[in-house]
Picture (cartoon, helix red, strand yellow):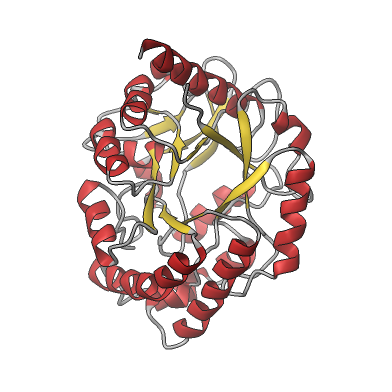
Length: 359
């Protein structure tokens, strides 16, 4: 019987109300997907801090083999002359992570915003709350969007929405003014050409995360939206260490993306070291959506078909549930509560075990 390398994203003892002991009690969960959140973007992750995080996780009888994320400095994405210094820092961070047994780094190449939602606590009929995206609401200014997110984050910093970075948002928009999709792709290739040889030396795979949502917003380019984009990214530097994170929620936000077909193609090519598996529910023909429980019937994605595609291609990478509902009175970080993600793990493991028994 094959086993999933099931993980759970954790934001650290200082900034996550969920404890490692709680994560350890989720059946079938062996991995923590972690990061250092107190190191400024672009600086080298100190070896001793990585070692301390690793010790916390292993002392709880869990493994730390996936980092999400080592964020990429905007100067690299924009293509400023200063990018070489930040790339050198990234190379050293890869080396330090490898010394601590890290096997995969999940990252993204989205300008300014890592992800965008227009509502962080949309109420569902069952009384739970979820994150929602409405196209019309993106007509707000970036500052209004930032205020909406920060005012509804329950006091937590959200990944990709760090206050010190967002305080510079107008300057960032100015800096990105001349960066179109072609320029962003060229800057990604420059980055990959520099770091993938280091990854090959250190046995650490890069796994780029899709744009979320997979469309241009605020005039900013998006370059990981669909199957063709994925092919272009892999072709930029042909190496098994230049990989992809497939996030079913992010890619699934475009109904034209055939998720099982995409999974079969890229998993069979051994270019998917990391999976995010979650569901979403389309609300109308305009493509507005909210996040949902993981069950297929609760959303618009066929989660059984997704897991079947992974199983058929003998997926042996790392996997985690993604954004869940806030349920049972939990008021933690939106999308990253304990209970619904634990239910998601149970559901995904149940599908996998059933598929194993059908062989």
